[in-house]
Length: 229
Ligand code: DC
Image 1 (tube, rainbow, N blue to C red):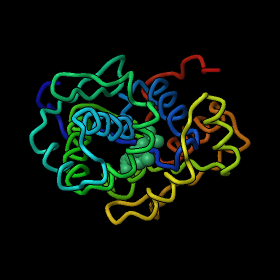
Image 2 (cartoon, helix red, strand yellow; image 1 turned 180 degrees about the vertical axis):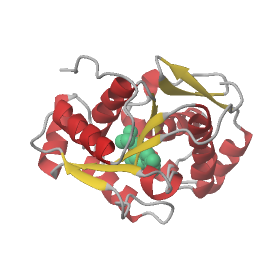
Image 3 (cartoon, helix red, strand yellow; image 1 turned 45 degrees about the vertical axis):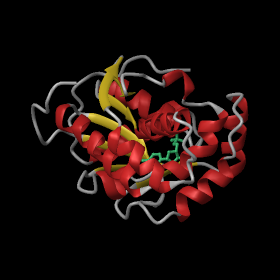
């Protein structure tokens, strides 16, 4: 990615717990608005893969910090979506590995990991209008954006969604760890609009967000494209 060209790009923050539907919603919203889609969870997963690949124990915060300090991490785009290269490798196909699912909450709780990746998130937003999903985008990464959404769903629905994706992911344990850590825990920003997606389709959630953005005076540059299944 080239050096930041402009500041004051628009940032739409989509936060929420695991399997709340925020990824599908954020991806579709970005497509409709023709914004870049940034998946910050995938960035934490990429770093977790790297740590595990180097044989580092994800519980060893000092070793994780040291590995991060020395790693070459580059932001890129693939089909208008964020991609992180670490030491020249794109770990995309490994991001949902069981061991990454198991290690990511520990790695993402290391403060230096968060500092380095938050800086990368800012790099994307200096260059592009972005829809960025995560846990702390509205509360910590971009506290000044007026466009904040928190997507939630009942624990039962979230477990069903992960199971339907054929994934072994202890989402309850991960939610506990992500909400109780010291560094930027999962919280609802005071000024976020909360949407419970339990009984809504992706299109309905996206529409609620677009209605809210319009009410806030957000100018929609592109006409919505066909919706996803
Ligand atoms: O969105 P996800 O389930 O792929 O995120 C994987 C993990 O990354 C999640 O368990 C916590 C961490 N994460 C984070 O700490 N902060 C973010 N902004 C996004 C994800």
